Image: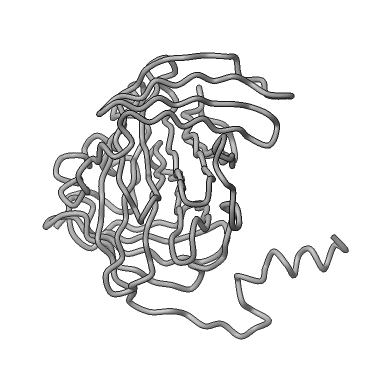
Amino acid sequence: MTTMNPADTSTWLPLDGLAPGFDANKAPHTTALSGREINVTAPNGTRIAHRFADDEVTWTYTPGEGDPTEAATDTDAYEAVEVDQDLFYVQFHHRYLPNEAVSLVIDLRAGRVLSIISEILPTAEPGRTRVVHHFGTATIDGAEVTGDEPHPTTALIGRRVEWVYSTEHAYEHVYLSERWYSWQCLAGPERGLADTDENSVWEIRPGIYVFAWREKVIPCASVTIADHRDVTRIRSHGVLFGLDETGEVPTHFTFGAWGRLISVTHHAPELEPANFGAQDAAGTGA
């Protein structure tokens, strides 16, 4: 049983305190991208070239119209997992900007990429989590682009999923709405703790979703990609990124989990959270 006081968030475990053993169910790194150059272009013309070796990626960033980011190039260590056939999740932590981590979902079959930048804000800002996410879509240069581009989805709303990260770490997630989800620790050093935090969900392929959350108590955030097509054996891969116990040093570690669907909540149609956005738009005439 945890010795932390659930009502006193100052006693909650810092991000670096969670790391030991949390990665036990992480999938092995794949070198399937080694030797490949994958260049992507965003809708505004921003172009990023990626040259993959076995465990390092050299990237070159060329900003497009209206992009305030300066041109840059560097080499970072990366981890990659093949989520599905020709679908890769790539994760790395910038050396030149240690307050940023990069998550790439590369769909070689569709010729599409979703990038998620996790950014630690310089200081806490009222009404914002300390770590924020920036989502962007792009296409792979020279590839035949097919199907729908990655997009926000309400598909997970109402689901309750149990996640096992190791023999000692387990949590449950309840996906409440487009903006909110609730978590509870079922096993591990945070057992008994629970909260409701911001989230974003994007569909990559049917049944495969990026789920990103941003915590308000601990200065951290996560990006995950999970295959929900078999709800009895859901497979997830992801990263946690934020500040250590001192509140000054970026902490970045990857993990994996096995999940199973516990239940699905069905609301009355007029109360369905998945329809909140459409109802609000209709109410404003948008």
